[in-house]
Every structure is written in C-alpha cells, then in structure tokens.
Length: 382
Image 1 (cartoon, rainbow, N blue to C red):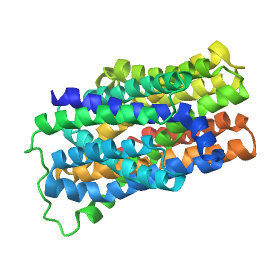
Image 2: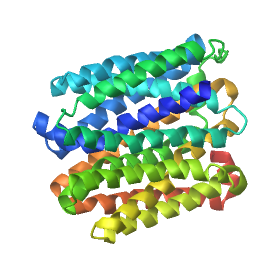
Image 3: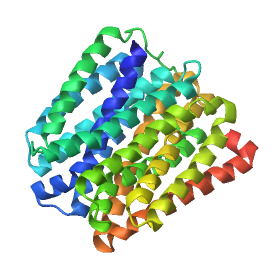
C-alpha cells in the first residue's frame, strides 16, 4: 500500500508541474507579465527546494521520514488552495516558495524510503514514471479547463483535493518507525559535502531537470506561437512529451539491471539529442510531435537511474540528507534554465529554445561520457 501511495504522490507532483506549461500564457495575461518575468515562478519554487535541501537531512534524523512526507502533503494542500484564490503576483511568488519546499520534502521522504530497498533502480524508475503519468495528465487537464472557460486557477483546487486524499492515506499507512538513526559525527552535513559523488550527481541532475522543464514548459508556447499549432493540438503534443517520459521510465526500467545504469544513461542522452534535433528541423505537425515523444522517452530514466546510484557511494547514515540535497539543489535547474530560455525567447526569438536545449544535452553527454570512459574515475566520483 505504501508503494501505491508513493507512486500516486509522484503522479500528483507530475500533474502540478505538467499543468504549468499550458497555463503560462493565461498567467502572463492575468498578471500582465512577459516571458522573462514569468520565469520568477520557477525561481520561487527553487528557493523552496534549496531551503529543503539543507533542512531535510536533519529533520529526517530528528522527526523521521513520515514527518517529512506528511509535512509536505499538508503544506501543498493548503498552498494550492491559496493559488486558486488568485493572489497578487508578489504573494503568489511567496506561496510558490512554500510549495517548492513542501514538494522537496515529500519527494525526499519517498525517495529516501525507496532508495535502500532491493531493486531500487527499478522501483525508483517506476515511481518517477508515475510522475510522468501525472505530467501527461496535467496538460490535458489544463487544456480542458481552458476550453471550458472555467478559469485557469481552478486546476489548483483540484490538485489540492487530490493531495489531501493522498496525505491522509500516507498518514494512515506510512510506518512511524521508518526513521534514520542520528549521526554521531560532529558535522554530518560537512562530511556529506566532501563526497565527490554528491556534487557530480547534483550538477548532472541540475542540467537534466533544467532541460526537462524547459522543454515541458516552453514547448506549448513554442508550438502555438512559432509553429502556429492550434492550442488543443499543442496541448496534446506536450502531453505526448510527458507520455514519452512516462513510457521511458516504465519500459526501460527492466534494462537498468541488464544493461547497467551508466550505459543506459549514456544511450538515453544520445536519444534525447536526436529527439531535439528532430523537433528543431521539423516544421511542426507529426514530426514535431514525434520529436517531443522521443525526447521525453529518452529523458525518462535519467533522473531515477542516476539517483539510484547514489546509495552505492554514500554511507547509510547520510543517505536521506544526500538524497534531499541532490534532489533539491538539482531542482535549481528548473529555475535557472527555463528562466534563461524565456529570456532568450523574449529577446532573440522563439527559435532559440531548441538550440538552447541541444547545448545543455550536449554538455551532459560529454560530462557522462568522459566519466564512463575512465572507469576508475567514475568509481571515484559517482
């Protein structure tokens, strides 16, 4: 039952992230802001993730994983009700800081619960695959709401109701005994920050999260404004991207153990590059939709597979703090890269989105390939 609730919680986080790309034009219209300013929404969420990165480890040791998870669920539920009330933009940013913190706590608790289990690589791919299920549903839900003229913010009331139900379920079934023993080191955070694997995983995943969110949140704007796709068609195409992400995690999970985690990541990076190139040189329609699906499919295993490697190089007593730190700081990419993409699109042109994503993926492939080429270095770093 805990796995069902954990997978469902990741689906809810996917819905929350998936609706934003479709709702961005409505948010810009409602608040009277341009593409550069709307990037502050991503920054606000990241500030919350950064706070959680330094708080989650100590909080898990003192209060347990159950506290992290329930704290996150309650805060998300309350904050999304406030978003539904259409607060002023400045207040919305504050609310999203809290939502970012709460999402990070919920994600950290669930990842830390799964990571030490047998077959964690497969289980993490499945759990993060349900994030893709939610991210696939999100654009469809947001598109439906816009087509019915219900007001964009009603989406967040619906998500809040789902979060309340899941939080109640986790409160009932998640074991109170699932805690991390306190470390006797003078400064466990300082010890953790000296481990090279932590920094490689954090930087690599920051690049990944940045390009994933850039494609997911800006492709709707790109398709409707640069390729003149109808809103409904573009919404389906963006959902196809998130569907690809989900299928990649679900279908490639069995390859994690057979192919090897490091080789799988390298092949998926190459495939994602091919998908971006296909979107770049297509004029829209079927080829663009196919390129989005391929990109999402190859993105799928990257985050959970990389995260599943971390316990191999991290002491058990530092694992929750490490996973919280990596997941939360890596999420900075969700603010930095979409914000940069928005600025380039605003000042240079919408066409810059795809070269921007191509450069990020190329840097990731070079980084991973250099480490994979030297196995001794790879063992030392990750």
